[in-house]
Length: 325
Image 1 (tube, rainbow, N blue to C red):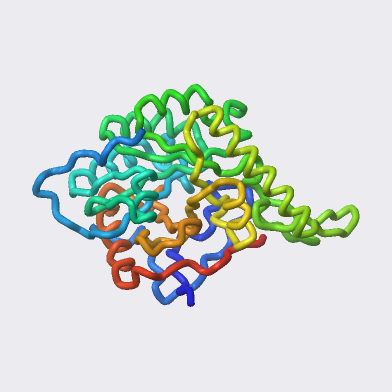
Image 2 (image 1 turned 120 degrees about the vertical axis):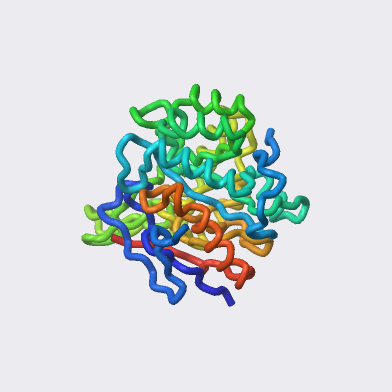
């Protein structure tokens, strides 16, 4: 039976930085719930660390989630200074930045991870990843991933352009994944109700009818397939990774992801590490992309999450999470 992982306070749904939902869904209660902000003090190999680096943990990777960077910290936006400090703090304390290709090989049993493994991911495809984060990551030779809302690339101010994505590709550090073609938003699910477009049956207020399961499958399949095709054509990379908008997923969407060629997917709200027993389409992350996480507490935050994971390495998220507003 699946064990429900801790819904860390402040990590629920991430609507503020990961979509345009009217309001964030409440965090799910757990006796393990923890506020991370209160914790104290072509793929290259992992960034270099000191030979005397301490071993904080082995046999798992903590996947960190970011969204954007900007001069003023708010919501899911942190300052460039804070981000640079966090990356430097992790590297100085012996953490090894690994690529999603290394994570995939680890999950498949065909590769191992260094101790203190950390993977860096960015959702939404914001231009600030190129402007502020990429120079820091390139200087540290730290692999990272960005999950793009494909129909926004090169179309809106504040979002990445294809030229910027391809420029980052030249470093060999970036993995590109899908964050849907155009399903990162909310849809009506009934009178006065809304839910994530990717995991909800659409309600038509004009007719009072709700989308059938067959219509839902056709809509979502077309979105995910088209997103993957465009990303592969633009980047030349195999697109195997996906990030769920609003952290919302269920078994129906997982089946569609598999059928459209995706092999791995990351969640948004589960503050847990990834062990070899993790479900490839339900990989937890830790939201370090908020002002609550700082250069002073990021090391203890990652250590704490890794320690929780080590106590129950076979724990997995519930089979579905579909918020409503």
